Image (cartoon, rainbow, N blue to C red; front, side, top):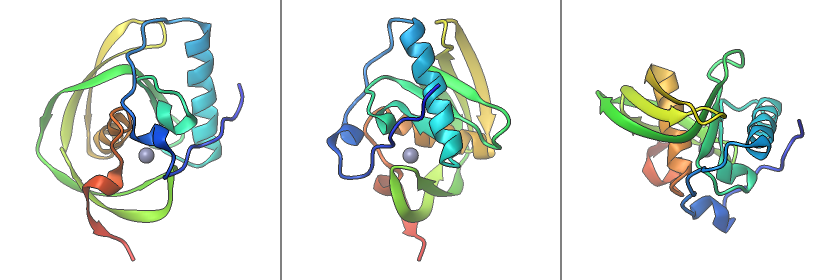
Length: 150
Ligand code: ZN
């Protein structure tokens, strides 16, 4: 595993749409391992492909630093309710603010071997999923921020 550099606001890659992953090979596995290490090292709860300079539809999430989730080609297939979330982003240092997100979501994705799975998430986990999956379409939380924290 190796730590990767985190791309910061202002770099074009954060605004691009990521490509679907079609090869579930060793490169993908190393990418996910590296992302996990990079996120943990930076004390983050989630990290998406573009944040390490890779335009692939992948994200890693860890709401508490213990349980890790990996998503390849994720899509939110169902969502309900709403919650106001205090968000920040490893790619947008120094800014925090409130974003409205669905309270419950259902995610369809694949694991690192290409095996499909469905995950139901609510609360904080749903919040992180929405934030990370937005990255895969070039969307940042500051685009949706309804209130900036002073
Ligand atoms: Zn982010």
